[in-house]
Length: 167
Image (cartoon, rainbow, N blue to C red; front, side, top):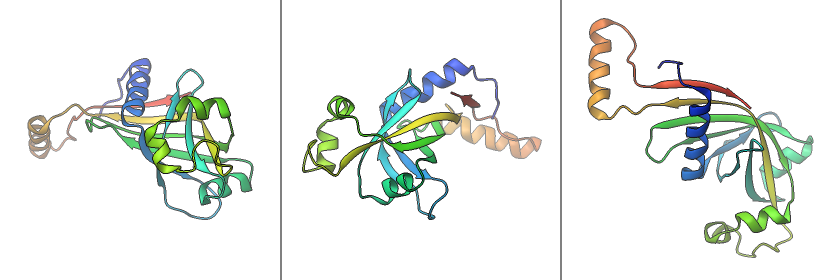
């Protein structure tokens, strides 16, 4: 992996991957140890935020509310498997009726059968601090070539780019 990826290009590709894929794994640091869980993300690129629907009584919401916010990680793999990313930031419960209306869709409705007016329904906001992104457009032929070359030259294969992004 090389690190010569332009920041704007990396950021554009990252946000496009989130918008296209939507689902990733979300977890918090601190509090009780818990596994990351699949969540659907809604991107507000200009604000550097991700938004998630959840219930007020979930482990995730209780963990975050127990200390007024938590550092969180959101990890995803793009649908085409060219982008692997891990984003970090502060996660907090933030009820916002306007955003609920904006992001509500049939997929969200399937997970929350009581609808938008369910008193347990809330949103989580993740204010992004940083991200690490790996981009590999190497198809199976290039992958095989790079692995064979690496084994012959004793150098790491060149399968793409990596970028660190600060928001």
